[in-house]
Amino acid sequence: MEKTKCNLCHKEMNCSEEGCDTVKHLCFECYRQHEEISDVELDKMHVEAPSAEVRQKMVDSMVEEVFPGIWDERKEELKELSKKELAKFMFSFGAQVMSESLMDEGDDEEEATEDEKPL
Image 1 (cartoon, rainbow, N blue to C red):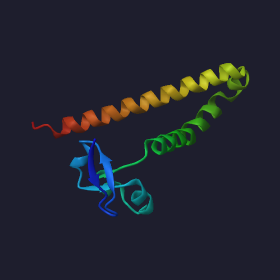
Image 2 (image 1 turned 45 degrees about the horizontal axis):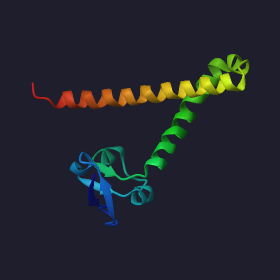
Image 3 (image 1 turned 60 degrees about the vertical axis):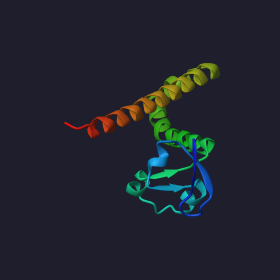
Image 4 (image 1 turned 90 degrees about the vertical axis):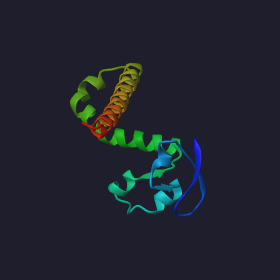
C-alpha cells in the first residue's frame, strides 16, 4: 500500500499500487457525498473504501438480487429442511455465489488484459 491524497478534501489515504495509477483519488467520505459520479468517471478513479463497509454492501446487494429467485424456485423444498440443514444449504449457496462472482471478476480482468495486448 502507498499513501496518496484525496483530490477533493486532500485527506491522506491508502492506495494499492494499481490504484495509484488512476487519474483521481477519492476518500470514501467524498465518494459518498458525490453520488453524481458516473460509472465512466468512476472507472478512472481510485476510491478508498472501508473494507467492512464494502463487504456489507456486496452482501446486501447479493441478497437482494439472488434470494428472491432461490426462494421462488425452492420454497417448498426449503420449508421441509431442518434449521441446521437450511442454514447449511443457504451458507453453501452463498459461498457458491461469492466464488462464482470472484471468478467472473477475474475473467473480466483477464479479458481486459488480453484486449490490451498488441496484435
